[in-house]
Length: 259
Image 1 (tube, rainbow, N blue to C red):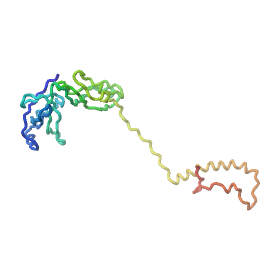
Image 2: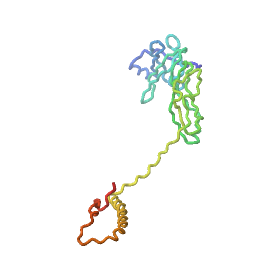
Image 3: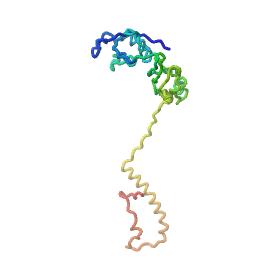
Image 4: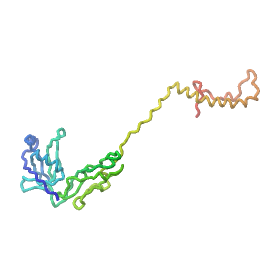
């Protein structure tokens, strides 16, 4: 059971756009909500909170002091920042009950080195950086370690079901078969073969004439023995009927292409 970290806050009377005056004084505006109670505007020292938040994250149980009614157990629900400077602008605290389980997104902490990366040149594909956890506030982990030393070969992977947690205290709500991290090969782009330049029109025509002329010449040689015994045509005689039906030459002198 983790011990609650104490954080000093006090009720805040400055609301709306006037909270900029608090930030100029080094105070961070916030609000405490939930827990079947009304929301309470609060303020806290910005510098002190920022230093502590780096250690706590969003899943460390806090004990808010300085409010009416004694200490209030809470979790950090959200921290708003300036999108340009990254400076903290506002913090939301969610009241929790130490006797009721709550839900939080717990970050994954990747530890050790993968042999597949060190010896095989693989790269790690990170599919998740956090998981959803259900637990009592005092049992909520700050982070969950993921041991990469088990990734020995290419395509070795760690899934949600492989995460090492104390199942008696916390329950991971993600699908057990959901991928967390995988060792994959480095992709090398294949070089495309050089494209063959298209022939110019004159070259194409010449190749077509040359390619189609060979069969015609061969056919003429085969026809010679059959014509050897034939009588020569009388002067002025008409050509044979077969010659009349001969296929016309293709434009440009080449033979017509075959269907």
